[in-house]
Image (tube, rainbow, N blue to C red; front, side):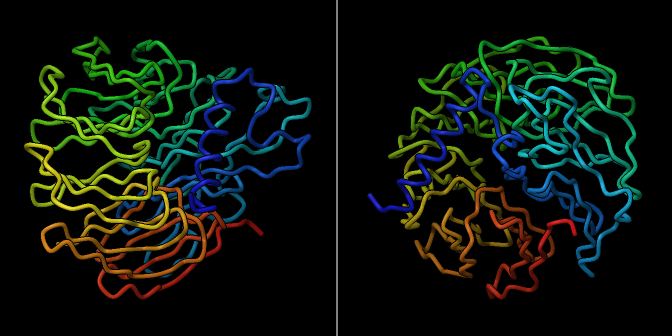
Length: 378
C-alpha cells in the first residue's frame, strides 16, 4: 500500500476514534500546543467566497479582487467557552470542519465547540448564536438552509432545526449515534446520515421521520439528491441509490474502501470518489459501472461539475478533470498540498482549500492556478 494512502487511512481512523472516544483527547486542546484545524470547503454566493480557515476564523473574500470583505477588527472567530471538551485549558478558537452556508443576508457556520452562528454576509457582524448558553456536542458537518430554517447535526446524535432569522430551536430529532454528516435539503425533506449506520429522511417542517435506511457502516458523507433518487456512501464501502419517496433500495455499488465524499451527478452518470484512491462512474439508473479512474491517492474531497467535466482533487493535491463517456482523465494542476475539503466552483473557476490553509482558484478548463491566497490571520 502506498505510504501516503496508508497515512491518510490512519488519519481518518484517528479522527473516528477521537470523536467516538471519551473526549479526553480533542482537536485544538491548549495543552498540546496545536492550532485549530478543519476541512471547511467554500460557499460561493453573490461574488463572495465564505469558508472556515484553519485558524478558527470564518472569512469572506471577494472572488474578483481576493480582498477580505470584512474589516479585520470584526473578522469572525468561533470562540470556545471556558472548560472546553476534556481540556484543562481551553483555546480561544476552535476548528471549523463544515462548509458555511449562505442564505439571504446571512451566512451560517458551525464550530467544533458545538455552536451554530449566523453572520451578516456584508459586515461579518454576529446576528445570533445557538445555543445562547452552553454548547452542543462537537459539530463536524456543516449547516444546510431551506424553508426558513437552518439544519445541523451534532455529535450528540441529534439533528437540530433552527429558525434562520432568529436562531430559535424549531425541532430536534434523535438518531442512534453521533452525526458527522452535513444535511441535504430537497423540497420538504431533510436527509442526513449517522454513525448508527442509517440514512434518515425527515419532514423539514416538524422533524417527523418519513423513512430510514440502514447500511452496514457509519455514514459521514453528505447525501446527493438527484431527481427521484438519493445517493449516499457508507463506511461499509457501498454507495447506495435510494428512492426519495420511501427509501427503497434501487441499487448499491461496492468500492475497495470507504465513501467519504459526496458524489456528483452529470449527464446521467454518478461520479463517486472513494478512500480506495479511485473515482467510480456509475449509471444513475442502474448502478452499472461506466468507468473507473485510478487517482493514485485517496479521494475524500467532494468533486464538482463544471460544464461537461467533473473536477476531482485527491488527498495528495492532484487536480483532475474526468469524462466517463470517453474514459479520459486529464490532470489540471498539482498543488503539492493535501486536500480534504469539498470543492466549489463558479464561473469556470474551481476553489480548493488545502491543508496548508491556502485557498486556490484553478481554471477548470486549462488548469491554470489563477491565484492562491493564504488564509492565516496576521
